Image (tube, rainbow, N blue to C red):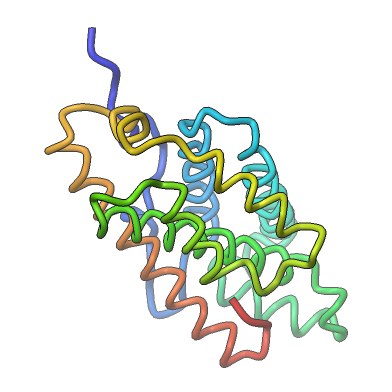
Length: 202
């Protein structure tokens, strides 16, 4: 009996997240992000728990804000604007801060996977180290960086990881590419939104 492909087991892909003139649908985005966390489960190493917990914790904070503000936080853009209007001090904006860190984590994941997909001879540890250095590293202090570098070293070999996404690879890789491209587009969009609104840097 064949194992189902990873993209058949997730409940929401980034390709399915609704994006309108009003922005990125918050609930759909959070569900897709929750499913992204499962990819690190395929890495099969406890060192990645730190990455998973970081993403999951920030998803929970944004979800809590959405639950309390279902109408004014329907999109990521309206959530940011609503919290800014109601919470004067930037340091007190819990949902904005959580979304910023969540997007940073997603950017790290996207950069790591993109480097690996574009370089078939490169191992995941090298690709994710590049992804980390191009994204999260500059926001981390001296205590956190070694923890993440340890996780990068714990990446599985390509030969182990890709089959876990499912077979045949000829079907799985195009789905991974589409999922990754959609994720990259959302991150890029929100980088612009954060910069324009003065919400922080992703």
